[in-house]
Image (tube, rainbow, N blue to C red; front, top):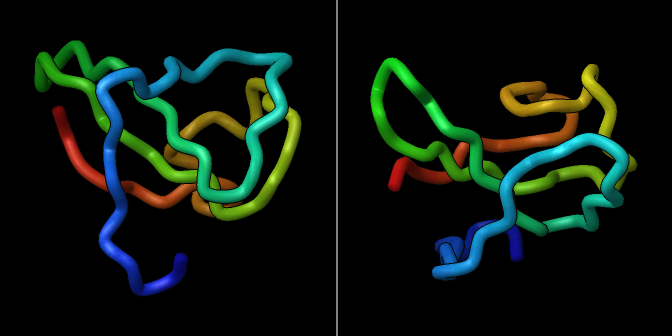
Length: 66
């Protein structure tokens, strides 16, 4: 998928701990200041912890805001 325009589905999962995130899976994070949801795409498969939450550039890349 590198180079492809990412598709953001209507049911993008909310980021949470203790979840396995596979390569290219997407998550949403609520931004209270901007009053929107930032969508992130996983760039390295991993199990989520407090240290792997977006915007951690080792695991996620920013896609868009909804």
